[in-house]
Length: 212
Image 1 (cartoon, one colour):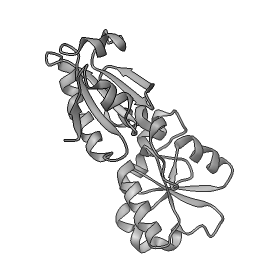
Image 2 (cartoon, rainbow, N blue to C red; image 1 turned 180 degrees about the horizontal axis):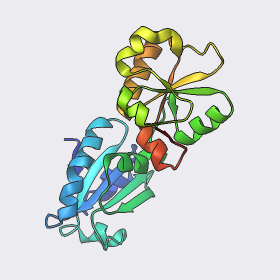
Image 3 (tube, helix red, strand yellow; image 1 turned 90 degrees about the vertical axis):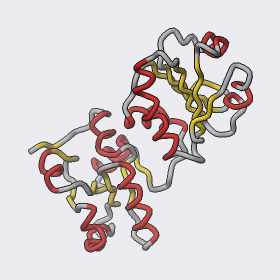
Image 4 (cartoon, one colour; image 1 turned 120 degrees about the vertical axis):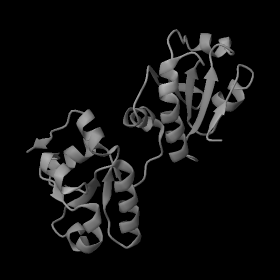
């Protein structure tokens, strides 16, 4: 089970003493927004097995946990690392938002590049963004100066991914797809990075987008 139920009695052992960072979903059975959030939490839990621990707490059955974290409104999400609250959010979150909430406690791959880092590297001439989405998406909006190589073409255009001009290539699109391609290409000896959180994260951070 990727999302574990914990109680007032087991919270300290399962959450506060956990070696992994813990995402805590405070919910109640009668709460409709909680039901909206639940499958998103479960999906993230499945994808991040081994990197974070995900638990849920029914606030009606476990008043001590609810009182400790002043859960006056639910759903409430807590990110707890080494026994301390690192992040918290009240209300429903979409998947990109939930991943951003977890970002400060996630172990980072050497190939992972944050939007802020990529923006600085592009400005310094150290990186070239590579948009791996379809041509239609690229035509509508993209990171300025990005090169377009759709994911279906990456294998046949490997030469363009080499840093022959001194700029590391950083793949972006859907976060998981870019990560998978980055890992595959690196295994083949092509040193590329990928944008954490994908293009959605770049937009959400208010960084420049070129349209049309």
